Length: 61
Image (cartoon, rainbow, N blue to C red; front, top):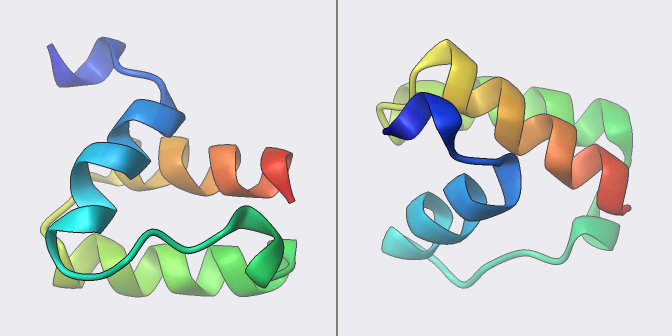
């Protein structure tokens, strides 16, 4: 079930569909939040999925 998947898993499953996986250190927290909002629409992510991915990227940078 998607709602139970952690952000790291969602990141790995969704982001690689269209491009190489970015390193969490490539962007700062503000940039990840902006990217996440953009990718929520572009990648057809739910708000929850996008939030989990953004939180993961912020925690790892």
